[in-house]
Amino acid sequence: MIERSTRLRELFLQEITRILSEVKDPGLSGFMTITDLELSKDRKTARVFYSMLGSAEDRQKTQKALDRCAPYIRKKMRGRLSIRTTPNLIFQFDDTTERASRIERLMDDLNNEDGTVRPSVELQQAQLDAIASKETKRRRKRGR
Image (tube, rainbow, N blue to C red; front, side, top):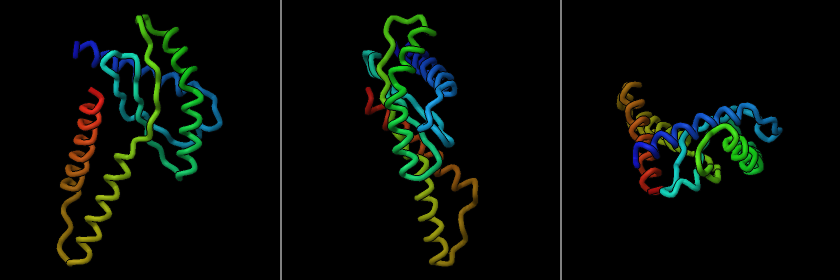
């Protein structure tokens, strides 16, 4: 069962990304990336996480546009995939990258205040990767 859920999750991620590239909605301007997808146990609901560059106003416009497009995307997925049930799509902004950059800024501020040497870029990147990994695991665990 886990194997099937994982395969479906990856398939849904690919299809949603493809379909979104075809959508012509003015609210979907800017640089947006689908970061993750959580599939419910019954596979009837998929929570799609996205990130984007821009202001809070841009995020709100994008969220409204994605909410408008969700039924269309689901319909296109139903036509392209031969599966019994196509999940309802719920789009949610993923703030993991913002939190990671905030932590990085705080670390820089601390390093600059006490005069110590900054950690290497590799160490900082490893810490940011660990934070993102923990957030993804937490989100998946919460969905189960």
